[in-house]
Length: 123
Image (cartoon, rainbow, N blue to C red; front, side):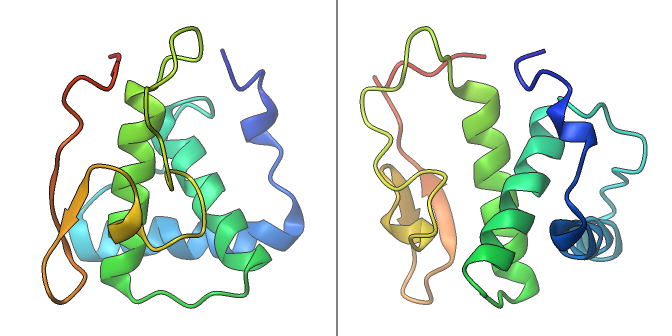
């Protein structure tokens, strides 16, 4: 797989946050990610989010955790490394997801839609 099996080796510093994300997704939204392939976009999204939270010493409420997880999962599912998106400004960065290219938010900074037409999405 593209992750070259690295997604099975979670550094201890990120493991606690990874487990918290997984628990939040299960308790709040019923997403049971216990038996997940290490190279699945959802797993890589959780790893990315755990690392991003730890490295930036960030605290997100449950809504933001789920929003960033969902968007990261979409990116990792739709992105083709052989034919990159035309515009991926902000995606998979610590920048607020409402500033990511094509992400539309309401006045409360809640994601309400995506507009990624003609951006070379795959998947």
